[in-house]
Image: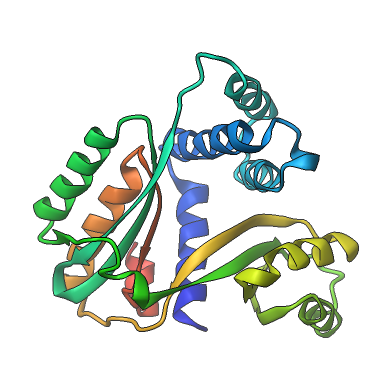
Length: 247
């Protein structure tokens, strides 16, 4: 099992069991709002909005909340979010890349800088860690009992998949960023609906740490994930099965 697959699995489990689901919903609603303001409120004619709605449904965001976010995005009182990225290092040379959406850039950069400092990391300049990641399309699909793994794998590869992994009742599909749209169409053709579909930044190299250092870095990662302005957190920290279980 690849490090990415392990992180994807633990992220899904954490999301399913998170008592503070309000924070997850806040990030989903913010993405829906940005997508609707940029490309209009019709998911059929707005691929980004369609994707945001799909991911929101996968996280069980109520339908009323989704519709309210879309409607509000077209109103004059809707927040005007700006999308920003920040890069830096956690302790022990672990690279961290943040994707943010904010209505107050000063608040966000102060919060990001403060968290890096609090947990022994450092905020860097643009480009300082970006080269350590590559962007890929990642689809997470719930596996059905009647599925034939070989047949499904061949169909998905035909759609442009670079990797197909079956893990704990889910199918994780990785594709090149240029094949993201084609993969969505292929999944629709074969009747598979992704629980989540994202463009992610995957590390090209990883850092292994002992348990104590691993736990220390994860405090910083968790703090970023708790920040309302931070939409996504990427890093190149590798983890053993035991370290993942400790989370």
